[in-house]
Structures are given as structure tokens and as C-alpha cells.
Image 1 (cartoon, rainbow, N blue to C red):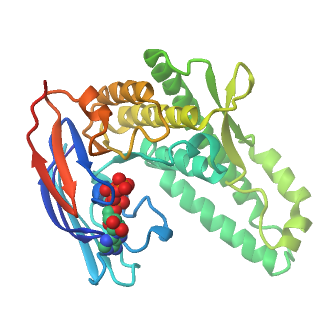
Image 2 (cartoon, helix red, strand yellow; image 1 turned 30 degrees about the vertical axis):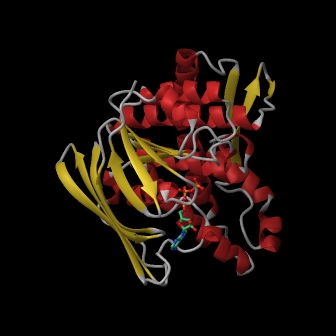
Length: 350
Ligand SMILES: Nc1ncnc2c1ncn2[C@@H]1O[C@H](COP(=O)(O)OP(=O)(O)OP(=O)(O)O)[C@@H](O)[C@H]1O
């Protein structure tokens, strides 16, 4: 799969951008506030339908305008297709046609949080990749949500009468735990492969911390917890009772921010290996500020690992960063971004 071209209109400070995306690695270079991250964000919206930056970063629509549009021309096994993303002023009409066609993976300043951040981030990471790995998982998750809502409504109405939802709820919850655990086992295997090949973090062991996927045991716990569930008005025992952690020689790994970032990136490599083996597609890598919080030695090493990925890679960097000159190869493309204008430039590699 390949993203051939992208057309962006009124997206943050990118008023009108139309560029062809080369096959290999592209450097997106410019000063602060040029629009480098916005360019990655626009591509991310094409793949995922939403931004990776939260509400505090404000509207995606260029100030003074009421709508924003991104179009991407993608080449996949079915031939060329176009993906559209747009947003209107009320920000509620984000939509994406044929969205599943573009797979994107992000490495950014928050990648360390996959290791040292909130459990919900790790669960989202696992569930997102699980859905790509096993297309039937989406239906399982929506069945889980439906049954959870039905059981919660029953609890809120006083939980009188027979517990008609418990059996079905215990079964679907067990199926969710089981599917996650199986995906995680594949992820850990891939993580070890990646770390061994890179000869980096080989002593680190990701470990799943979910409940047993046993419907009878879950049913028994639901029964035990029923009156407390009725008092709180929702089922405590749910899909969010799961997380994973990292161990080093059997004890909890106390990673530095930089180590956590490296491990988060390795996890992304591992997830990509597992998912692309299952669905045959390679992701477009969006790499924002790779060297933030990393020594130049580690950044160079990570960039070499990134280059082994089969998909396209877009890497942002501030103008003048030594990492760019130290690691650029003759095949790389270079884009200069300034005041929201993106231009491909030719640079001699010495
Ligand atoms: N809705 C919007 N309309 C217009 N401009 C916006 C909007 N949202 C953000 N901006 C501006 O877009 C500019 C580009 O931001 P972006 O985060 O992409 O910069 P960057 O090149 O990644 O910078 P840095 O290297 O400092 O992280 C910023 O000046 C920001 O204030």
C-alpha cells in the first residue's frame, strides 16, 4: 500500500498543499510553527478519521474558515483509490470514506506513554491493533458494548428479577479477554524478534495483566459483585480491567523517559509486524520530532530501524538538526515547510 499524493485545504495553517509522497523516506523540515506536525496530522486524519492531538490544540480548521478538507490518493491491492476527510465548523462531521484503506502509525512526543502512561492508552493500542489483526474483533467489541449497556440499564433500574444478562455478558467478556490475550502473545513474540534484531532492550519483557478468560469464573464474580454493581449503577468487571506492563529480569521495569520512548517505538514495530503479516498491508509511518528526549546516538539508531520498515516514512525535523545531515541518504526526499507552505527541495548528499 502506498500514499501517492495528498491534497490539503484549510487544515490548521496549511491553507493549500498538494504534494506527491515519495516511496521511501521523506524529511519534513522547517522552523518552529511551520506546519510540519500539521502535515502529519492531516495524513493521520486520512487514516484514522481523527487527529492525534487533543482538544487543547484547538480546531483543525484554519482560523477564519468554516471547513477543512484532506484528500489522499492511495494505491493498494485493489488499485488506486481516493480517501476523503473533511471537517465542518461544528467539528462533529468528521468523516472518512473507504478509511480502512490507509494504515498509519504514529511516533511522536507521547510515544513513551505506551510504557509509562495511563492504562487506557495501552488498552487502546492493543484494541486498535487487535481489530486490524482480526477483523472479526470489531463485531465482538460492539456486542460487548451492547451487553454492557443492557446490564448497566438493568442495574440502574434496581436489578430486580432474574439476572438475564449475566451469562451472555460473562461469555462476551471472556471472549474479549481471550482475543486480547491471544493478540498480546503474538505481539510479545514480535517484540522479542524486534529487540533481538536491534540488539536493544532484549532484557525487557512485556507482560499482560488481564483477568482469566473463563466465562464460569467471570459469571461467579459477577454474582458476587451484583449488589455492589447495583449500588454503583454499572458493572465493575468490564473490558477496562486489563493492562500490560514491562518487566526487566522479572521485576517492574523503571524506564527513563527516553527508554520508555524507545520501548514504545519497538512496540509499534512489533504491532506493525503482527498486523501486516495478517492483512498484508504496510503502514505509512508518521514520525514527529524523533529526537525529542533522545540522544543523537539513540535517534540515529532508531532511524536505522525505521528504515527497515517496508512502508513509507515521513519524519519531521527542525531546520538545522544534525540528525538530518547525519542520517540522510541519497534516496530520501526532502520537503521544506514554512508558514504553512510545503515545497519539495533537492539537496545534495555529500
Ligand atoms: N486552526 C488553526 N488555524 C490556523 N493556524 C493554526 C491552527 N491550529 C494551529 N495553527 C498554527 O499552525 C502552526 C503550525 O503548527 P505545527 O504544530 O504544525 O508546527 P510545527 O512545524 O510542527 O512546529 P514545531 O516544530 O514547533 O513543533 C502553528 O503556528 C499553530 O499556531
